[in-house]
Picture: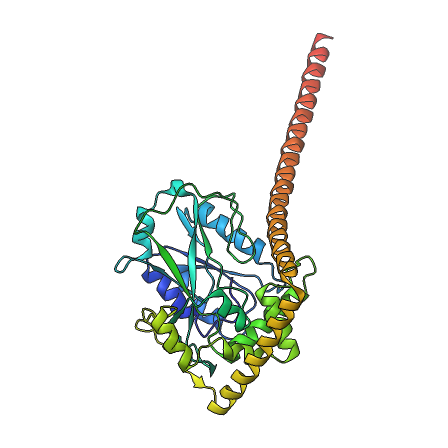
Amino acid sequence: MVRDEADIVRPVLDNLFQQGVDTVIVTDNGSVDGTVEILESFGDRIDLRHDPVQRKQQFSVVTGMARDAATVHGADWVINADADEFWLPKAGGATVREVFEQLPTSLRTFTVDVVDMIGDPAERGSGLDRLVLRDTRSLARMNEIGLHAHATPDAVHIGTPHIEVSQGNHFVNLVQQGDVPEGLGIEVLHYPWRSWEQFRSKVEKAGLAYDSNPELQPSPNHHGMREYRRLRAGTLFPYYVIRHPDAAERATGAADGTLVEDRRIADRFASPVADKPLGKTREAAAREYGTAIARSDDEWRAMVGAKDARIDELLHIVDEAKHRIDGLLDDVRAGEEREKAVRDELQLTRSRRVVRLADTVGRALHRGR
């Protein structure tokens, strides 16, 4: 499900096909930046749908696509991917398809690690040649720069018409059966903060979509909600800047292995949108301000205590459960409608039989007379 991803969607799709994916199902969510035209240029290689309603209805849309992957396209395995993710095998040389061909479907489902790619901040640009560092910095460091955690793993599952994919693509209603065999790992390189222009637009659109759908109640600690609050408070830009490491942190990260260069995407794909760097003075001021307000946030969290963080975590779990229950209820309602239709048809058939029987008896009696 994509919306306004013209700065990256073409190389993402090219990568999926190079990795051996048979079919990509895409639902465009009312893009206005040229994304639709890019999607249409792939022709029948993608199953393109349109859902312009912008109420964060990802759960129902993605679940529908995942079910169609099985029932319409006959998928053995289904990847639930976002438009800013590059799926790759962990072992060099093999494609994602070659990995899946060796995975037993008896696994049913498993999760795939998502690694955020980081580098210099920029005013504009896709950043594929700029964002070349794998960000595995400590959780403590993530909190210091205003991030709650690293990206949540994505869910992979076998093709089945009964699948349910939770909001965010991170969980499904199947249980993993066994471990992924050694040497058959898959990972995702994730590009969520490609430029200030792209990031600001993404946060605003996501926040407004959640605002327009009161049925969805994400945890206040949900990353999108935190970013949206920062946007409205006028502090999102410094937070965007400080999550990109400066020269000193890069040197430290290279030494301790938490910021390691990975050029697999940079060496294969050119950035569709050229980079426009931030001015050095503007970047320096944003780093100073961002560090200060992030520290204030840390002090506030420490003052409030860990209990509220745990409450937020539980609210998030409840939210995920609610989405799954909603999906199950939808299935139950659909089943009830099918059952009623069958009952109505049987009743109609019986009625026709009674009429035919009555006609037959009537004709026999008439002949008897």
